[in-house]
Length: 343
Image (cartoon, rainbow, N blue to C red; front, side, top):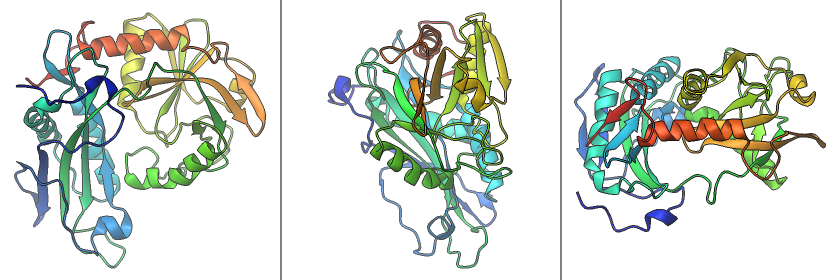
């Protein structure tokens, strides 16, 4: 299929309306068959559950053109499982995992002309989401729901390479113990908006949130998990019941163990360990950027610098990122079941 006439190498990370989107409705206690449609607009009641009580969950993944010219997507079954868990937590009927994967593949196929060519550093971003659409005036779950997927071509999250960023320790809490921090719900991101706008006004790229109960342990940022490297072949990954189980993080842990021969510790990480200089490198990981290096953390005026510095991504984070993107783009052999071929 002929590609769209876009300036692929200069795409930003922003929304473009593509040709088709996938829609399925939940009515009368059952999911109906989904379909691909052209209309990007949504019509709903002013009293829809998503508008009144923020009943919505979502996912984010990408499709790529590989080095050998195939179109693929990366581990969509894990996104499907995570959305399934997110929906259960918000009393929403989960969309079946197999149907989710089929819908992702169908949507990408229908928008094949929007998949950026290999070598442009651009990808097709895929956004599955689900929300309560029937009227709800009392505080109750909606009865009817809609599951949708749209796609949009995006450029690299960081133009000119991933430069180390400066972040701050936030005064806000991201998620309460036993709350919704471990699911991908829109309400979590709404809560983080004031904190990130405040951080940007103060000159910081992101917030790091400490655990709400004791404010002694590292959790994550508003939209990414955290990785730490001790400088001695050990990757340290903070754990908590309120951290979102990132698919990128899980993949990088596997890469560290099985491709790079690293030791991996998945455990609670105390902020005091970071302040004491126990780590040489730090990074944020997620779908958009894979890894974003942190060069400095500001704790209310006290600066903690990582040995990797503020000029380039450190060698450990660089190797992790290059290996995972190589797997995604087809230049490095992938573990079985990671790559779903679409074309």
